Image (tube, rainbow, N blue to C red; front, side):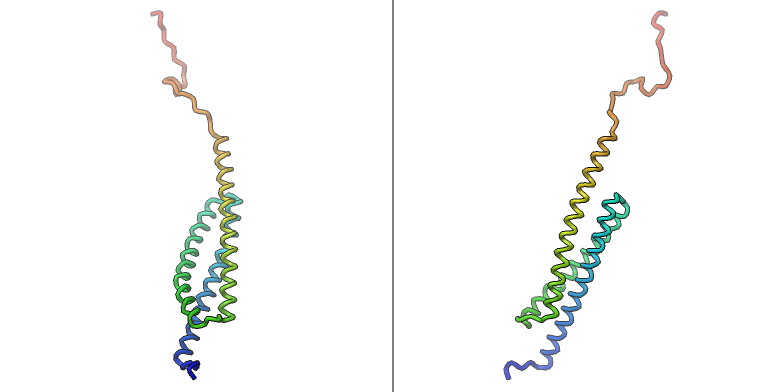
Length: 154
């Protein structure tokens, strides 16, 4: 009979499972949004659309902020979950694997975008260098449009 849970303990466990599940689902949805954003960001980088890229970077910051705040809630819930369910729960384990896979994909895609952006920046620097006009020393008369002569014989 010592293994029997009271109704309150059972309700607490069910509430914990629901809450953890809800937060993991939210985290998974935000990661899917983030991956979609990274794909659009990649298109903006390759098309050299600075305005779109700027918008995507701002959106990326908001999504990452949301993900970090979700993570701050999920970590203690996971600790409580592990204490209550040492053997695990199938649905929670699947969600955790899904979130882990999406996180790895997001890190990889973010790294690809970072490398692509570095290549684009290097290419842009080369084009700017090619456009530079050599700087000549300016003289006092360089801005004058008419010629000046000085009569030294008078």
